[in-house]
Length: 160
Image (tube, rainbow, N blue to C red; front, side):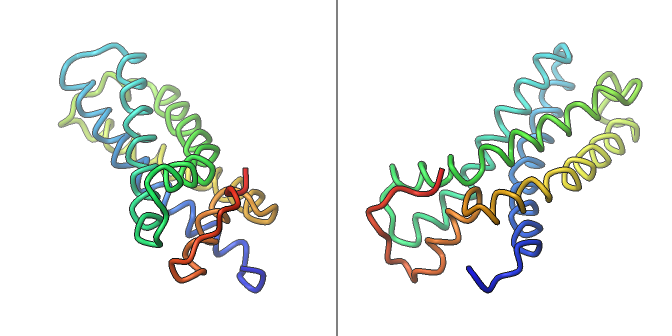
C-alpha cells in the first residue's frame, strides 16, 4: 500500500462506503416515507440500514481473504465506522435542509433528487476524511492489509 495513491484509495473507499450507505439510506427512506413515519424515525432506520449494509459489504471480501467472522467484523468496524458516520451525518443533514424533501412522496422527483444530491454531497465531503485515515494507516487501510496479503492474515489487530 506504500506505493498506492492515497487519493485514489480514498475515492475507492468512499465509493465502497457510498454503495452500502446508498442501499441502506434508500431502503430506510423508502420504508419510512411509505409508512408515513416521522423524520426522526425515518432517518434512524436509514442510518441503521446504512451501517448494516456498509459493514456487510466490507465483511464479505475480508471473509474471503481467510479471516474468521469475528475478526472480519472487527476489520469492518475499524475500516468503515468513521466513513459511514460522516457520510450519514452529511447525507441526512442535506435531506433535512432541502425544504419538503422529507415529506415528499416516493413518486415525487423532489424526494429522489434530494436523496441523490445528498449522497453526492456526502461523497465529496467523505473523500478527504477517508484520505486522511488512509494516510495514517487507518480506515480502509485496514481492509487493504487483508486484500494484499493474498488471504494470509496476521494475528495482530487491525489498525484503529
